[in-house]
Length: 191
Image 1: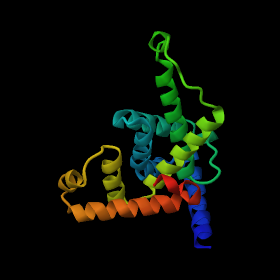
Image 2 (image 1 turned 90 degrees about the vertical axis):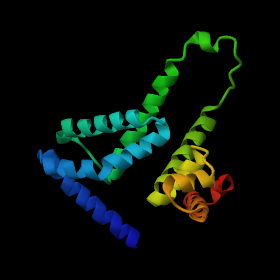
Image 3 (image 1 turned 120 degrees about the vertical axis):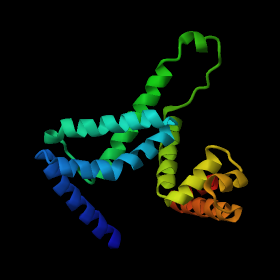
Image 4 (image 1 turned 30 degrees about the vertical axis):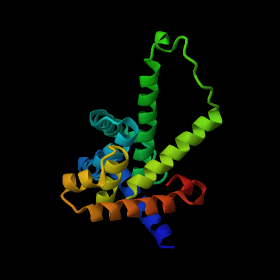
């Protein structure tokens, strides 16, 4: 019930903000920008692995929101709208990167055949995992990402964050539990 109340409240707040932005209210736009820019960049970094590219795309998204504000349609929340836009732009950027591989690079190589279903399931799973990671508290997420994406040891993480190794271990354990819970029983075997 509380979750539904929060959703309704957030949706109402976002509809009010949307109306203000449609009317050209720069303060309302600034509020949305300040609220979501950094978290959107972090989300896109998980797809792209490039901070500058993530920031560029996030800036483009917000510029597009402002330029197209009069015809902007948001069905649920700004957060959902922005994250969907970010996901789509990241997938486009990744697709564009892959399109630049020359045929000479792959000529003569055996390329595995992947079905569309497998590809979609993998993409859906990646999206779920990224959402799960983003739902972690900031410190927990930072420790987890250093462990899993940068392959740092617990000792290295502890030194870089100026925390104890025990704290690193506790944060990783907490992250794994929360990710398992987020993913549900279907993908628990992954973590």
